[in-house]
Image (cartoon, rainbow, N blue to C red):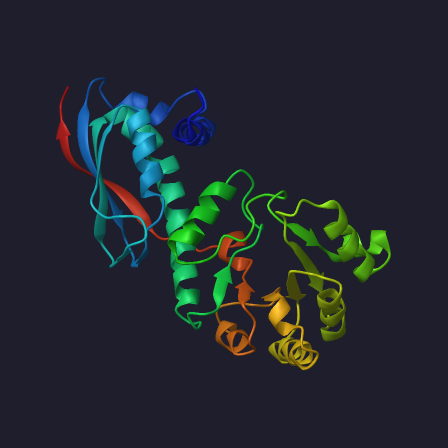
Length: 285
């Protein structure tokens, strides 16, 4: 029977399999068989936690006892224990790096997202992009959500996004938008990537639901918003600014009046949150 939790468990075990290879030779040599240890995962710096639910699934699949000390989405201070794991020493030490890599990356993404969200007005959404690590899209985007951000589209089938290469192939922006609407399901919105205020107006007049203002300065984004407002089509579309938005300028972009600010660096180059696994007690087997 299909089970979403089983699919996630298999994803996690594949990550572990990649790291373990033919076995943890160091742990096998130094750790007596049957040794039981009690450990804690510690956040060594402050931030927003993500990945703890996945950590529980991984531990349970390996027959380890695990208990959450904090919850996903919570902000913690430095040196905070977040997860307790008890079980076979060889198993815990062999899965340590996979567990920490996942927790550190996801928590780093959640922290960066939360910091960006705090710099913007509540009415403006902060979104990630599809610039995620191969194979880690689910984990990266869940971390964004835990940080208070918008996941944008998970897959290519979530949304029709007409980009510059599509327009070049079709030959005309307006024709591309009309063709997308004519052949797509009613359930799919059509977003168009544009590089100027004039192109944004053309997209709006041809029925685009969402317009992505790509790689424009805050000044140019504001000009596009004003043009669409003057032409009385601003209320017909969702406006997204993307391409140059980062932590240093997101507040400036938010002032332009767009609805969504998408930030690629949240997932394509996140700073991992420093976390470690510490043995707190050894029970000899």
